[in-house]
Image 1 (cartoon, one colour):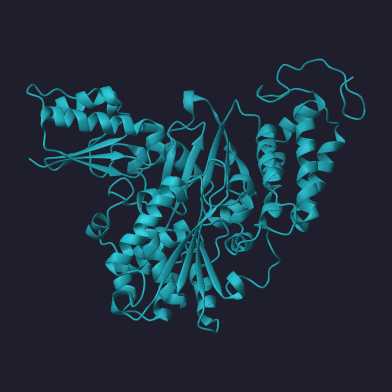
Image 2 (cartoon, one colour; image 1 turned 90 degrees about the horizontal axis):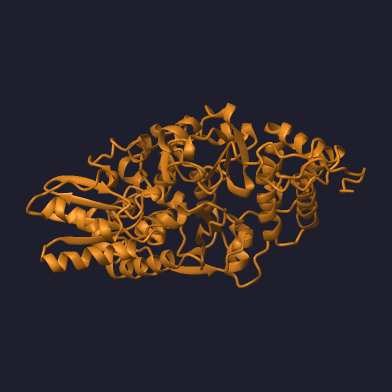
Length: 545
């Protein structure tokens, strides 16, 4: 009788108490002398049910959670007790290997996250057992131009948010003269509520390395930097271990797999500045300078790290590459839309019932994501809006729930795809306060280099604060809109250019809430600074008398 217990030990699992559950499971197995393999894995995505334990037993695959130390006994009794009794029904998540009986998992299409929660991320053997580095072996038999054409045909677009065609970016890098080129993986991930990159690296680090190695072969780069924030200690550890294992296996270093290709990885830990998610600021940080953006053009593909051609993609973009090489570009392209192939991962958070990491085909609707997968809002409260793209994105209201999750469709609403943050707000959420929250973040994270961002975001924040405190006058909304447009047009980098998005979209779709704050001095949702403030008089300057 072969039995395997898998337990998710990523950051989300550990935060939910997975270490105590793991220790209790190991102790109980020793006490009962049950010969069972216990495998530590990454996150399966269902963060709302952590700690999760998967039991692979006699050909079946059952998933349980949340399992606390006391729940371990019930699981062992079910599978190994003399009078086998089912575990408490509230612990059962799924009893099918395809998870079709649990919509949160069953409705997903996993590519970049397919091995997260399935393999031990610290085991190269586990990765190799699931076709690990087979895509690299295949790519090394292909010409760089053939690889780039495959990425183009797959319609893979940059998953960092801008959606620039990946194959085109690689082609530009490939055509640059000179023997020295660099590759960068942007794993900085600073959006509030975002955890896609962290989860992928913690759960399947070799996939990211393999994607980067294929990109290096296509472009002609010999050194790659993985820029990751130091606040991700588990992911940093996973990367270092994976690189050392890959070097021992022969896919890192000199003459990789006998192909003549040389490549080395460097893990650069960032200090957690949000602006370093911008590619030029990120490069300055790697070079040892303060992370501040510079003018473009020239673009990194032409003049990047230390002045050499540099290709920058994010974690999810590189993680998509091995599956494209193994399964073919047509397979990948067919999963998405005519302009964008494949899948996109999202960190679903906020007032949603089922929070976690979700990977779906591009082109699915917001309604499918929030209701079919996310289960709607907690407490059966009414859905009000979803913020996409973090501080750089925008709020989409309930009447646009049938919008497709696609770069162009989302942009038409005033929001953006972004790197994948998706924060749900219900009827108790003040949309003015949501805009103020994100402006607080971007203003604090502004590097201060350019005046429009440094001064403009501060003035925008002051105006939003005044609105939520009942100190605004009717003309302030027009002034706020004008200021947003100025900051958007005049800022140096993407941080400042997109900082107004949460304000502009909430003004566009929730103008009545702004009017209530300014004219009636009340918060319709009853949740911001105006809650409880009634019948106060105000002077013409927006100040309380």
